[in-house]
Image 1: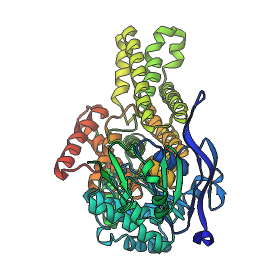
Image 2: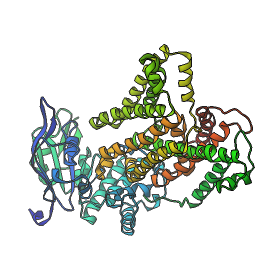
Image 3: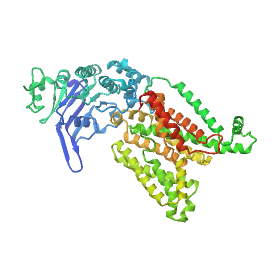
Image 4: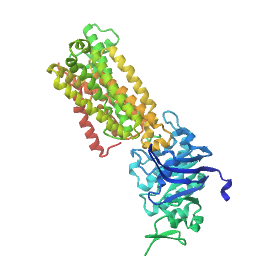
Length: 264
Length: 342
């Protein structure tokens, strides 16, 4: 592969995810082996209930894996202290922030929390990064607005800026395109593609926008009942992976267009 | 966090207003003392001994108590509102007042149940303070133990409320069996009073208050991070359990001790943070915390001025005044701005 010389940021080895209680284990998916390289935009796709969220929750250490290991920068994720993990991995979640009575620049500045002193004062270096991030996400003119004044699309950009300000090797986004119109879905994903290229950060996002993801991502992680595969979109199309994504009674995947169509 | 405006002038004004309120509070009382004499009394050069006694041993500790109570309850309210992401939270959501009330109720009304021997020992000034502290401490302990086991912060809120209901129920059972005299004594405690503290008691209150304030200052960054919600806060490297515990301890120290010494003061803890947010329109705790401190002190000093009905011999219950004056102010602020800042 041509990317072998690229640094591996996130890697899983025989990862098995699910829920464990004292009595029983519920395995959602197992034998997951993925490698995410530096500067890659990676889409995580799969049907509802297949375990996308569980995988993201496991990769972000919100819940523990049942088996296997997750490495971030060649270090086992369970060996990271939470403050150190915050310096290599940032998140954009689907949940709303609790207080919308924050200025955009205040919210973005909160991304610098892992680096600031006990009271959270920003250094000159922090301020430079915040400025740069506002420019990269194209929200300079929003910076003095309150978050409650923003549209969903604008707010999503601000949340991405906040994650960027955290200055981590990998950014993980949970369904960043929900609630957005068609234009903004494309806009946000295009922005992520641009950011991955420019900042050389690894960006992993889950999404239901399969056709957009096929067009924009360097790599896709596809979760189906047959298991979890990851490869470039073209290879996955050739292998017919997308056919296994959904039951075939309603929609079919067209290889030529790279999108799903409703059966007539 | 970076904040838009510099609030320097607002803070200077607030400090001046606090000082003015402090002086007005001292100059008012059932006996009128000329202002020049008040200043003299501070330096011990006053001739009238009884005036000096009134000012140094009664009015001055009372004014200090008002500042501690207002700022302490305000700050604990702010911490709870941010922690629980709930505008209805106050210092007493953790069941601290109910714990204190239970302690006091047991001391005053339980005496007849436990027999006369205990009565003599139990009913003294300090015993009420100790009983209230013990009561709120025990409820706190229960809440903390539960909170370390519970993952969801909202569950703690409900658990605090449940503890409140349990203690309230015990208090009503106790009052059913107690004499009119005891009941009256308990009700009087519930009115709240700023004026009963000696310098000695004030010192004890002050030391514990300082500890609580110190913890709250060290939590500013955590509070700001919590504005994003717990999951984001975790992803920013915040140790949620530790921060939550520190905030709960700080609140209990502040609210618990204040309740123990001056009785349950309603409203202040809930309303001061809202007033501050309306005035400052920010959620940044670096600004909010000192602002709540000053506003809390101002409101409490003013309420106390009104409660003592200047030039008359009556003193109204402070607990009633705080709500009577404060609630309309909060309503007015909310209506005027048409938007709740939270």
